[in-house]
Image (cartoon, rainbow, N blue to C red; front, side, top):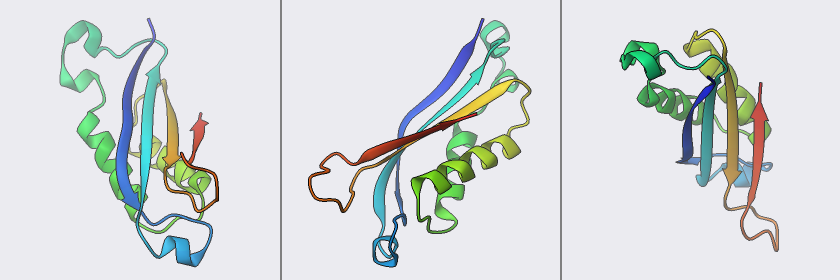
Length: 120
């Protein structure tokens, strides 16, 4: 039985953008994190916290990694997040997916921003 932990639309204010001017101010982004385990998380059967991934810890890793420096691209941020999550949580069989929505994009007519998705 496959299972997935999903944190939808975790909202952060980050310095991200192609130009220095864009990176000079904080901008809202929404980050969705998915941790999928093909053979399921043991907590489904045991109800023990040690048999799953702590959602608070996932949020801390995402917040710390995303805030440690300005990023020029959502692709760069996404890659950094997946590397940080894999490094922090040594859980065999977990596949990570990160979806980043940049909400305020300085492109005329692009009213809802855009989304980038990266998975293992």
